[in-house]
Every structure is written in structure tokens, then in C-alpha cells.
Length: 359
Image 1 (cartoon, one colour):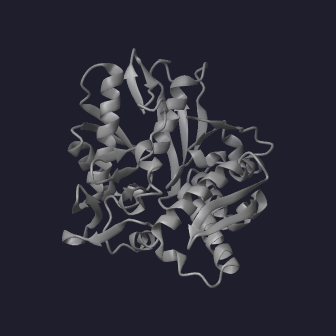
Image 2 (tube, one colour):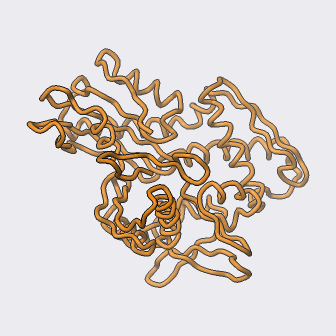
Image 3 (cartoon, one colour):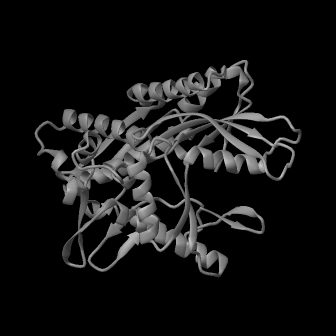
């Protein structure tokens, strides 16, 4: 998370020394955990560990996408007043229900606390980023989450625009000629692509950022690649052990399997083959299966296709040829997937646009 200090943006580390904090909240009998502490205990406490709340915030319970996600999450979501989705957890010995905005506010409050320690003074104001395709309801719910966290939300801006701002502040054109930047933002749960023009103008310290076109998908991200790996692994487990009880009812097993799949996905960014392994996954049975990078790419072929279709739509909406793109900025952990990078290199071949990572 960045803070503004000494006339520039500074990326601060959290209490674990990391620059990125997972948007994850967990509830136990004794405490509430946020960030890495929540993730680290997820396998032992899956039904009370909340993640991907961005896919719930500002939506109705009967929304088709909400109903589809509920089937994949280990935690319970029920219909509340006015058809609002409510997240059900066990906390301090009692059943409690939280709105998605409340869960989001817990993450924001943690970020506020981290910023106050870093700066050594109270923090009241914040700019919060959201996916491009968030509608008015989702944006308002995000503002509400900020208010619950005790923050004065100065502005809600699109995530790719924020990335372009960070990129532009560091690499403002040295001449008075503008640059066209494509921001390819593939994170954990959402995908955004934006085409922006960075124009330094007369005053090099006050460049202009014009958003030319946007595209994306609120349900496309690292979690969806993980889902495909989990499906593949479950089929393999069932094929090898036909006489076991239904593993789909074992939430702890599914959480442990997902963690192993996430780890394997990251390994496949560095090696051509790896193993998905979980000791005593279900009914005391150890699970192990080999997965290759090519198999991973094949099972996620439709997701990769969606990424490129959104990219093409963005260029089409801007009425711009890919040869006019000067820079490509990659944002989000899922852009480290080799297939994503190779697709972009192939698409921009001969046009000189080279992917560049933006933290």
C-alpha cells in the first residue's frame, strides 16, 4: 500500500515486512486475524476464513455470479435484509453475520493502522482503488467500507488508472510528446485492461492521464486458475480412490488442496513440471499428482482466451492499432504466469511493446 510523503508516493511494508497484504480475514474463538495471519491458518479454519469479498461487495444475494461463487467458497453466505449477502462465521463462541462492506473495512482498518505506524501520525484520508467494471453500487459499498474503517474516502479510482499513475510518476516522458500505455491488470480475483495516454504537457510535474478505453472481467483472476487446478485434482483423487466418501463435503480437505494448487501454480511459473501433494488429504489417504505447465495452460485455455479478447476489445474501443502502444505495464501476481507473458509478446510482436512489471 502506498502513502504520500516527501512529495512522492512510498510503498510501505506491512508488519510482516511484505509490500503486499492479502485481503483475507479470519475469525477464531479468541481473536480476529487480517492479512497473512488469516491466510496462514486457513487450512485449519476454512469455514471462518473469508476471502474474495470483492466478489460480494455491492451485489445482491440472488446475483448469478454470487450464487456461482458460493458453491466454491468454504464459508457460508446467506440472504440478509433487502437481499444483501451476509457472511456467516463463528466468532468468540457465537454465530455472527457480517456484510461484505464490514469484512472489507477490517482489511482497510488494518491498512490504516499500518500506515499510522509507518508515518507516526494519525491517518484519516484515503484514495481506494476498485476494478474497472465495478458499478455504482459496488463503488458506493467500497466507500461505505472506508467509512466503517474510519477513513475519509477522497476518491474511488480504477485500479489500472492507479497503476498508470504510479508508472507515469516514475517514467514521465522527458519530451513534450505523450506516450500510450496499456495496463494489463490480472490479480487474484479480477481482470482489468486499460489504455491510457500520458501527456506531460507544458508542466512536466503535472502530467495529464487520459483514459482512452477500458475492458475486463470482475470474475477472472488467480482464483479462477486455482479453481481449475482444484477441479483437475479432485477428478484425479476420485479416479484413483473410487471407494472413498465424498471429498466435496470435507471443507478442510478442499482448503488444503487449494493451498497445494496455489503453490503448484506458482512453481509452474518457474519450472515446466511440478507435483500437487497433500498428506492425508481425505479419509487418511495421501494425494499426489504431477502437473505440467502445458497441462495447466490447456485446462485454463478459456481463461487465457478471455484475457486476450478483453485486450482486443480495449484497443478496438479506443480505435487504436496495437502498433501505437508504447508501453505495456503488467500488474497483479497472475501476470507472472508464463502463458500470460508469452501471449502478450506474441500479440505485440514487431510493435516493440515489451511487458514491464509494476509492483
